[in-house]
Length: 220
Image 1 (cartoon, rainbow, N blue to C red):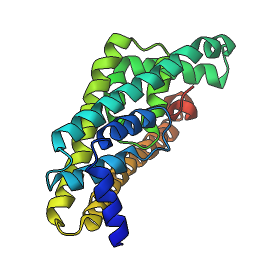
Image 2 (cartoon, rainbow, N blue to C red):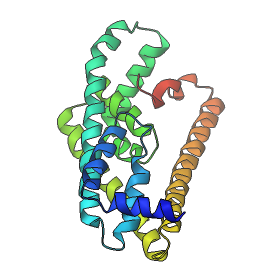
Image 3 (cartoon, helix red, strand yellow):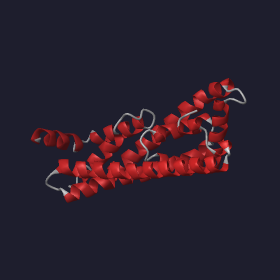
Image 4 (tube, helix red, strand yellow):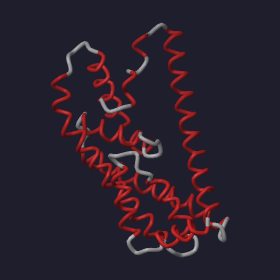
């Protein structure tokens, strides 16, 4: 355990850590198996002792997330033309695409901000917004809000754990990750209950069209 603590301390306090944090946060925007949130929380834990600088952690994590979201958007936009040409009117995929376009037009900014806190959801939403050609001038400011709020959130969770367990950073990281998992669980629980309620309402009214297409949660 002492070896793990020493390794983490050496890695997180290195000047190269800021570059690594930016790169991982950017990569996570379009390759969502990279643990960017865990890295931000760990940085926040050690920032409680002054190194790394908490402000720089927030700035680099936010810049990385902002960059990664735009890469995912551009990937979706680049593949959108081929996808839309292959959609046949009257098919399920065509209906899902139409639903996604209408939903993003109405609540695209809010969905983008909320999705940043859902593992995997951020990539699905940003790519879908690219596919449906959601205006970049509208996408960019909301992507900035999502990235900054996410970076502050992750750093703060870690910082609280670092303050609570100043002499045991491993416990601080565990507390930060536990809080993040709890928040994710609450978000997913609310989403599940809302989806279940919507399904129940649609069944009660007998309106099959009231339910959103099943493919709405992923890039279409």
